[in-house]
Length: 322
Ligand SMILES: Cc1cc2nc3c(=O)[nH]c(=O)nc-3n(C[C@H](O)[C@H](O)[C@H](O)COP(=O)(O)OP(=O)(O)OC[C@H]3O[C@@H](n4cnc5c(N)ncnc54)[C@H](O)[C@@H]3O)c2cc1C
Image (cartoon, rainbow, N blue to C red; front, side):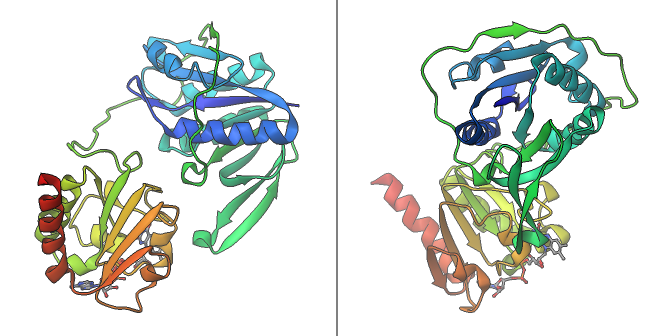
C-alpha cells in the first residue's frame, strides 16, 4: 500500500497550484495501489501554505517551518525532506516538476538510494510511470525497482485535484539541518504586472513572424493584457533578444496548459509543441497554411498577422464595452 508524501510548492510563502497536479497523480496512485497521501510543507512562515492544502483529503501535513528554510537551497531542502520521508515511512515522494523540485528531488533520491522518475506524464501502477523522451516523440514506460519511489510529474498532464471534505491535521516537525555546500546569494524575480506563464489561464505566444521586440510588445502585449493573460514566446524569439528567456515555452522552456493559448507568427516546431500541446483551446494565426501549429489548433487563421491582430484587438475591445 502506498504512503505518499506530496511536496507542497511555494515561493516566499505563496502557494503554487502545481501542487494540486501532484495531488491528482498521488490520488491516481492510491486508486491503483491503495494507501494514502500526506503533504510536506517546507519554508519559513509557511503556516498559510499548510492551510491551503488542509482540505484535499490528505492524511497529514508535515510542516517544516524554520528561518533556515527561508530559501529553497537544494541541499538543505533535500536533507529535511529526506528526514521527513524516513520519519513518515513514506513509499513515494511526489511533486510537480518545478524548478525547485527539479533541483532537490534527485538529491533526495540519491540520499535515500531511491529510484527517480523525472516528469512523469502518466501513473500506470505503484512503481510504473510513463514519461516523454525526444521532445515528446517517444513515450517511455519506466519501472522503479527500489522500495522508495521519488518522482516529479509534469503538471500540465494532470488535472488539478479538487478540494475534498474534512480537514487534515498538521504535524510540526523539528528541523535538524546544518548549512551545506550551497549558499543562497540572491533571488531576482522578473518583475511584471502580468500573471506568471505557468499559472496563467490565457497565454498569448508569439514567434519569429513578429519580426521585432516592438511588434511583439505592441501587438501581442496589447492582446495579452486585454485578455488578462501571460506572454509566451518561441526559442527563436528569445534567441533574437525580443523577450527574456523566462517567456520561452517548449522542450527547453516552460510547460504550459492554459484554458486558451494563442500561437501567433510561430510555426509550431516539435520542441515548441512539447511545451503547450495540452492547452485546452489552441488558436493559431500564421500566413503559411502548412505550418505545423495548424495540426493541433482548434481554431486557425491563415493570414498575415500584421493585418489580423489589430482588428482582433479592436473586436475584443468592442465586445468588452458592450
Ligand atoms: C534541442 C532544441 C530545443 C529547442 N527548444 C525549444 C523550445 O523550448 N521552445 C521553442 O519554441 N523552440 C525550441 N527549439 C527551436 C525550434 O526547433 C524552432 O526553431 C523554434 O520553435 C521556431 O520558432 P518560431 O516558430 O518562432 O520560428 P519559425 O519556425 O521561423 O516560424 C515563424 C513562423 O511565422 C510565420 N510568419 C512569418 N511572418 C508572418 C506574418 N506576417 N503573419 C503570420 N505568420 C507569419 C511563418 O509562416 C512561420 O511559420 C529547440 C530546438 C532544439 C534543437
